[in-house]
Image 1 (spheres, one colour):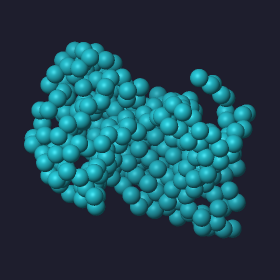
Image 2 (cartoon, helix red, strand yellow; image 1 turned 45 degrees about the horizontal axis):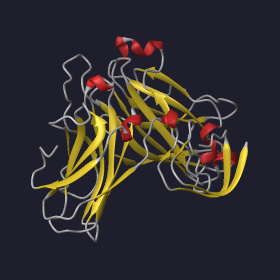
Image 3 (cartoon, one colour; image 1 turned 120 degrees about the vertical axis):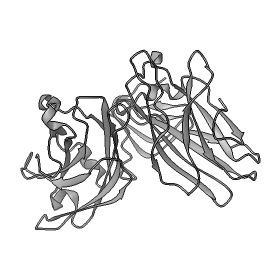
Length: 173
Length: 168
């Protein structure tokens, strides 16, 4: 791995897998596809939901004690933007108890029915930050972008995962 | 051109050109435009983004994001998201001005449209926003989410007009 001191680039720069602005504690953007899995194409999921399990661990020893991070999400689903996601949520973890407080404080989404939650199960030893957003009942084109502010080093702490489902209020992870 | 593997920079990275923060993320760099002086009520931008299915964007929406301001005291502030799409079924139907976020100051009236003429063989995605009718400083920053490779595929253009439509 190359390590450079302060660097000036005359011209453009392109990074295939993102730029982690660690000094400002802003993670790279991660891009995921709305068509999560095979069951997602079932008509039963018409006007269904995409659930995303992020790598963000909900453990105060990693996420910080009462030291909130911001989850930022941007995206759309289907051809005419029937669902558009554009929100930020703060996520705070209490010391020792690991109680999680989630607040969606900025949300200019459209037909998104956003919900952010803690996984019921553990993955790699920790509960993970998850969220659900509405999607169309088809495996149609649609992308979603996610990044973190503050504990940005946790953006790739574990594997990302997505699944489709009929409910936005049930926990799928 | 240097090609580096995973690289850590201790200190500040300064880039005079454009920075693509993850080609895999498919988000374009910001493109900055200066709003021209003039008393007209609207400013129009012709982006390089082709508004034709033959360019490969049929049934493949993209998000157009606009930030900016106009006026010495930021009298007009722009914070806009629009979904841009054309049908891919051969009809090449334009999917209008789908403004999903308009969170700037009131009355900026964003309008996204397809150019009436072709430029470099394609119609182009254009937009207008209201500006002050006095000559004041102001800038717009524009970027794309999805199909971001089109962000510099043709020349950008900007012009003022008394109308919110029909400049390009």
